[in-house]
Image (tube, rainbow, N blue to C red; front, side, top):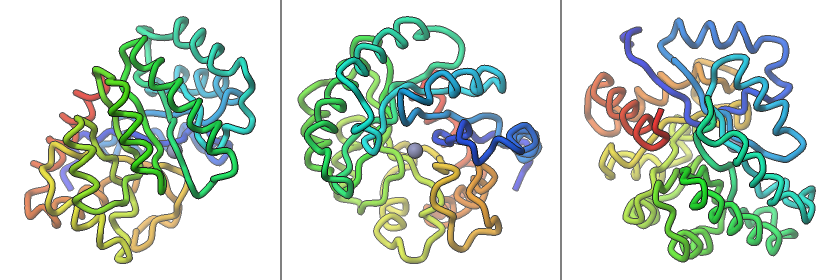
Length: 260
Ligand SMILES: [Zn+2]
């Protein structure tokens, strides 16, 4: 792996307490490995202030939003507060997207609330002209319908994508990118591997979703942005292209989507 290649992790929760003891060290290690930066997505209102201060302290990019798993915690004022936060931070250093937001039918009990908050966040992405970082699990028809109903000019990414080429093509047709991470290294993910082999490279951006999901078949036992070179290598193998070419395209895709 050429150390001069630059990678950006488009989805890493580096604000989580998991990284409190070694965040600075990890960022140094990342820079030495050619991983120049990360986008830190939000999960809940309670975390926004801490997340912003960590992102600014370490010169990372970040997004503001409400994760579908945290919709129960959201109050009637959460969307209004998010709007105020976007008003305050949009156009300033670091803020690059709305999210992560979306729909998750594995956590079905609050699905009605998830829908209200997802539609509200899509509207905010339109209002502030930002792209979306979307969490979509077992709810792809609903997510596609929402994205069709409200056209967000700058589109966004379906993060942690795990589906096959047919589903992938529906998102790509709408102008959305697919976030691909450590799952690609897992031999039990043939659908995703097929998607990465068959769709054009312009469809993807790299991510890790650190610290969630410890990758299988990785040299690293912990999920951090440091696994990106392995994901990139696997992508290059599946696409039958050089890592240099794939790396350049991934950098272009993420920089273009989030205007980095
Ligand atoms: Zn996430």
